[in-house]
Length: 159
Image 1 (cartoon, rainbow, N blue to C red):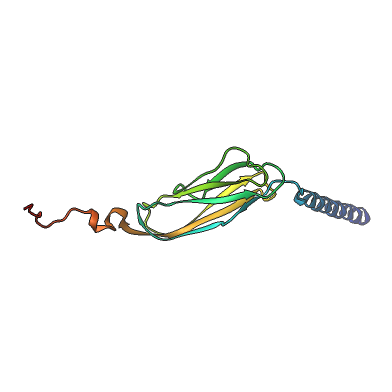
Image 2 (cartoon, rainbow, N blue to C red; image 1 turned 45 degrees about the vertical axis):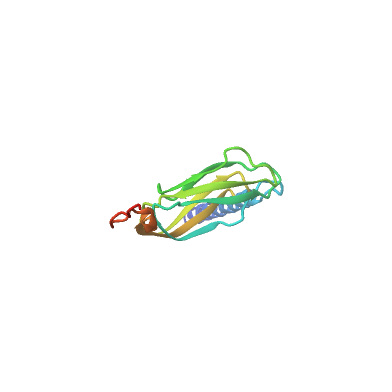
C-alpha cells in the first residue's frame, strides 16, 4: 500500500511539472513580436499644463507616428476618470504616417491632477499610456484680466 501511494504521488508530481513547463513555453510563443507589425511611437507621452486657472483650456494633442510596417489601428482610448476625455483617429494609420490623440481635462476641478489615457491598438505594444498633469487654481479664467471687467468708478465725461 505504501509503494502504491508513493508511486501515485510521484505520478502527480511529474504531471504537475510537465503542465508548468508547457505553460511556460506557450507564454514565450505569445510574447514573440513580428518584425513587420505596426507600432505606435509618441513624440511625448507626458504633458504638464503647469498652473492654470479654473475654466482655462485643458486640451492637449499628443502626436504619434506608426513606426511599424503595417497599418496601425487604435481600437480604444480610455481616460482614467470621467474628467479626462480622449479623442483618437478611427481610421487606420499607414506605416510612417503621423496622427494625434486629443485629450481634454475638465478644468472646473480645482487642485493638482495627474490623469492617464490608456491606448489600445494592434501594435507590437498593444497597450500604451499617456499622461497629463498640472494644477488648477481656484481663480476663474475671466477674473485673471481685470481690464475686461467694468469699472466701478464714475464714467468719463465727453467734452
